[in-house]
Image 1 (cartoon, rainbow, N blue to C red):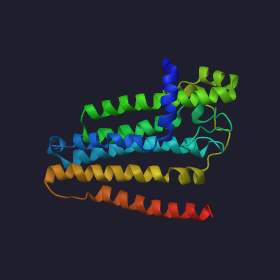
Image 2: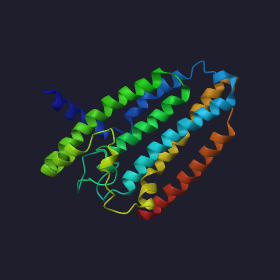
Image 3: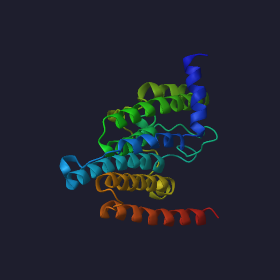
Image 4: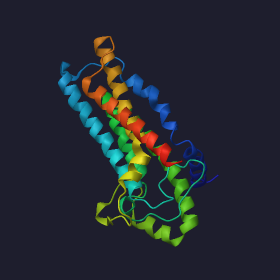
Length: 240
């Protein structure tokens, strides 16, 4: 079997499970916090670092929101059963990078991985992301080339796969839709805030020996949970 054929076949399998397979990294996140201590014995410094990590993760979410909020119908979806693309996206975020959703996912994962300040976790997350999304991207691009032919090849020759080239930026063909972006990405917002909340509780447990709920992360988590409940209810009613 050719290497590219292996990549695309593996990518087809990973595509269907791409929302769940990253959970395999959870044990590493837990292990990275064992024996944790505040840097310089300063909770304030620790909180500043955590906020920086959160900003990085939210930047990833912003990339995802911009991508789905400006994408035509029938593209950039959460579909898992099969590849789907009614048109080829070549404007907005797709004019600077071919896989903006995966770039956003990587920034989110990187923000979470920096939380414990261990050197090995960001490295492992980066390598796992490369192996994981490289195969999914290979399958997606095979599908797009089969469907759009020369149009895809010209776009792929101009736009890099994962490292943005901002000088090629073209405004989105469609106006940005906040409603569409929020409907699609409120799950991600809740997952990010829940992740930071849980990591902070685990971190403080190693320092204090007991459960401690930081006011900042507790407030962020509660607000996010409330927003999640509102959006989920609204989405169900809109689907009726």
